[in-house]
Length: 249
Image 1 (cartoon, rainbow, N blue to C red):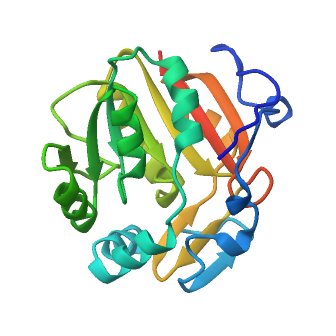
Image 2: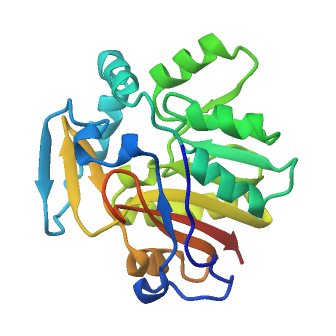
C-alpha cells in the first residue's frame, strides 16, 4: 500500500486551520471507493447537519461492540484495512522504545504494527470480545478493558494512539476523554488520533460515528495540547479523514 505526502508537517506552534491543512495521504486503490467501506454491511443512517446526541447513544455503541456476532462481522468487513501509513508518521515523532497506549484495538492490526516497530504497547478496548479474540493469538499481550472517556490505567505513557476510535465519542465525551488522556501521558507525551473529517453524525446498527474538523479539535484541545502534525487524507474518499499528532503542554 503506497503513501504520498504533499507539503510538510505543521510546526508545534501552528494553529489548527483548514487553510493550512494541505498534507494529503493517498492510500492504495483498495480504499479508493466508498463502496469498500467496512460498514457497508450495517444499516446506515446519515445526518448531514449536527444533531443532538441522546444520552443512550454511547451505551448503544458499547453494546454494539460487545455483541460477538457484530464484532465478528466487523472484523470480516474490515479485512485489508490498517493504520500502516499512520504508524509510519507516528514513529517519526517518538523514540524507538516509547510506551504507547492504544485506545480501541479492535481487530488488533495497528497494535501488531506498533509492536513490530519496537514500541512497548498496551492495548485497550471497551469491547471484551475484541480483547478476548486478540488474546487468543497473542497470549503475552498487555491488554486492558477500559472506557476511552474515563481512562484509569494507574500508569503514564509516552503516547496514546487510536485509529478511528475517538469518532465514537460526542464532542462532550471527547472533551472528557482528552482531559483523561492528558492525565495518563508522561511530560511532553503525544496523542495520535485519526478521525473522520467533517461536522455530522452517522449511525450503523446503533453504533454512533462523529465527524470532526480543525476548528472543533482546536476548541477541544486548547490549553492542553499543541499541534505537532495534522494531515487530511483519503481512506475511502478524498480528504474524508484527519490524522492529528498533538503534544502535551
